[in-house]
Length: 152
Image (cartoon, rainbow, N blue to C red):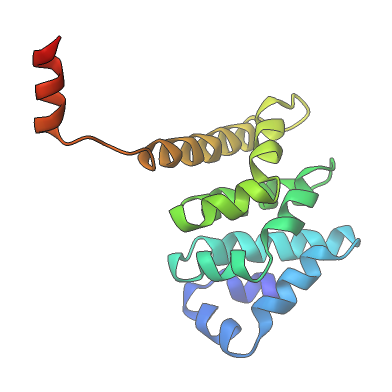
């Protein structure tokens, strides 16, 4: 039910207003593979909405996604997609890193047992995390760089 509703962008606010997003994250944390699959599917759709990316991470969506990616089951595909979408938001990078998301994505990218599409998505997510880490490095302004080059 949640998976179907979350596939429509128009319903995301309704899911949030009635507290269903927290329930979806709780379903993702259950041991039942079918619950994980539907929850990761729903989280992938919710994570594609920039308005909910930070909130999903703050509500604890990263940990169950990382846990799903560690086992060889069907939810791994949707969990990887959801984590990829959450990594689109710069503010989520530290939390994704702290909760083992980078290691999970690297493992997926290298794992020969996963399909190529999932490997590609994992590689994109790792690239996004790495490129934004570079953006955090202090930058010198162009004038200062020119002066330093002239000294050489």
